[in-house]
Amino acid sequence: MEKQFETLRVEVQGNTVWLTFNRPESLNALNLQLMTELQEALNEIKRDADLQVLVLRGEGKGFCSGGDIKAMLQMNGEEDFQHFMKVINDLSVTLYTMPKITVSAIHGAAAGLGLSLALSTDVIIAEEQSKLAMNFIGIGLVPDGGGHFFMQERLGTQKALHTIWRGDILNGHEAYSIGLIDKVTAEGSVTKEAEAFVQTINHSPVKAMMESKTILRASRKSQLEEILKMEQEAQWRMRQTNDHMEGIQAFAEKRKPVFRGK
Image 1 (cartoon, rainbow, N blue to C red):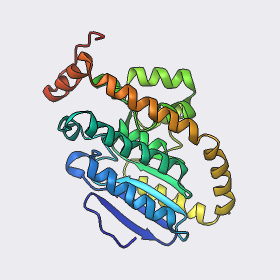
Image 2: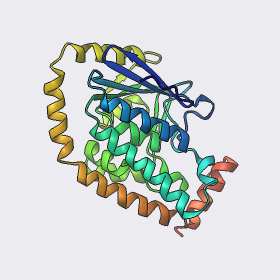
Image 3: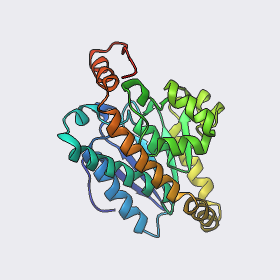
């Protein structure tokens, strides 16, 4: 991992690589550059047999606030949109099937697409005052990045559906109580907790762990890809709705949207 990235910090410590989203001025919102650099880094990590553990985290005040709405508003038509979605879909599949033990270390916000990416990893550790939200509904959209698939895997269909519909913001304890994350830790200690988990992995039969991951992920990969395709199609349809336009305008004006089901 010799390459330096503008929006992503890469640090290798023994058999572990720490990937840090590095757009703190936007709460690490996912624009095309960050997602492209993340995919490039993941491809390199995937090929490196000496790396066995991958930890995702965010610089600054939060993990990741989701897709960069400003960047999305600047997209020119369907071609730009479809390219953006393909990058998202590739990221989700790459993370879900990554032949490493993958961890998301969350502090602050993990929202929208940011939460989808976190859910694609094997282990999610979040600080107790984190704000986790699958909140696409607030701007009249549906989850992407495999959000439907990952929520269904962790919560079951009914609970996933209701959680997506509400778009609730959950703290660490609330997210843990419904099974959305794997561990809650005190404020300011998520990196320390992730380091402790890495040490546990380093004293475990990692190859056997990876075999089980490969078997379970392989059995579900085609389903994830199908849902990603459906999400992409649904997201384009929802972008044409009046409710989405109202949601975006309300977001920009910092007010509650008035949806009309159109």
